[in-house]
Image 1 (cartoon, rainbow, N blue to C red):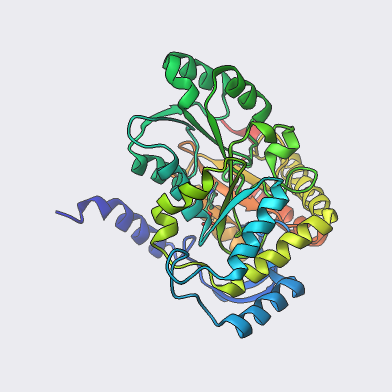
Image 2: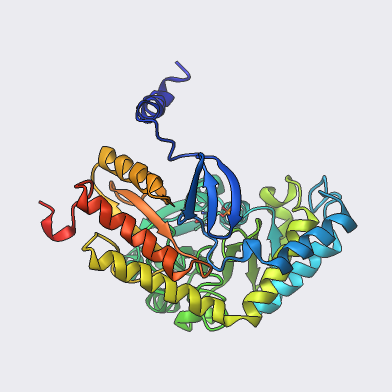
Length: 401
Ligand code: PMP
């Protein structure tokens, strides 16, 4: 039967309904601020958004958006190639290229379209792509579409990348290497100095998805490559406007002039409507703010450390270093769902992540922090986890069998 493959998901949905939990697609009825909302009838602290700098509620972004909607209307009703390229889109492309200190930029309607579109187009049949095994679904979708030979290297493992490039011999110089800055599920950062060194030794082109690291890392917020001092080794930077910039949309920037030709070969650019000008306007405002207010980035990291240190002090299985994403790894699905439910009851809304969205076979309670969270809110989140331990729903690492 055509639908047989969906039975596992249907069974899982039934299990969740039986337990009266809705971890996927829980409906937010009201947004009170960048960090608070009413979800499924409860007032909750939003601890699972990617609103890293809290800009979704910045009055300057809202005003820019409002003004653009009045001036340009609600949508472009066409693709960039047809009738959807407005001066707003061009202005943002110029500004994002300037922000990265390069000459070429493409703005896409979503981050997914940016990574999927670029990865499906940059390499084609006869080419080779080497991608980090924990790459985002949009990267996997893109490389699959590309028709190129696909080789996965072990997550964040430059030695494995080097080994696989070495095996390619002469073809290594033409290969496309794909990595991310901060990885979205565990919050770990790619070892970019080592990856760049491997690229320098064997050749190839480096494509870096800075979706979670733009705005969060680097002296001016350009991301993980800037923080690692290896921007010159990156051929293509991709990212999204839906996280630190608080809107929606995506981009790719590059110093390669070929990007202008590539633009017209990307189906995810050509055959989809361009972003509404109101979205572009708020993104432009947010891009200005992240450059003018580095203190937001400092606040994000102060908050990230507060949450990470608090959860680590509870002896919970969190990652090796503090990050704007702090994930608690769980082994048991039922227990993870129970924890999610209890956190909601305590007024804390986090992401429940199940394989294959989580990188291993583990389940995750994924917390993401914002510069807009107050210390009190972070302490409430930590206290909610402490209660999970007190009620036996979660076992601290040292007591795990
Ligand atoms: N790349 C990565 C690494 C992501 O985590 C995401 C979204 N979670 C995307 C791309 C897609 O971005 P968007 O949600 O803005 O479409």
